[in-house]
Length: 172
Image (cartoon, rainbow, N blue to C red; front, side):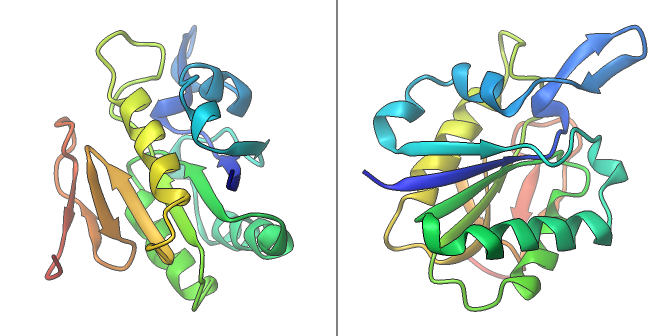
């Protein structure tokens, strides 16, 4: 069974309603518990360096996430990063250059709705991300969203409300 490190950074996928509106507040363990089928796919360890709205992700967090991957690279077969959608494509691109020539999958995913909303895309996206992260045919950085696997350097958020929010630009 493959061993995957799950890195939770916040975003809508991990958001809950608070007095301040929708805020990233759901832990990495709670996210995993919402998708119990993942436990049948792989062994998962979690870290949660942030619980941020993705509009607050910047180069400092990109470097820190790359360091987490680097420091744990030998221990895991792949990596899944839960992330907000607003800056996910930027993070995927940055990680593609910060973690060059990775022989292992580094998969970012998120959702248009919180994992606790009934008609969410979060559970499917998270499950699909873990499927991709343990795939021997994938290496490098990808976004997995709405049933699609998109190369990290080619991903762009092209829709703000639709479940198929990301497109692959000039690449299949």
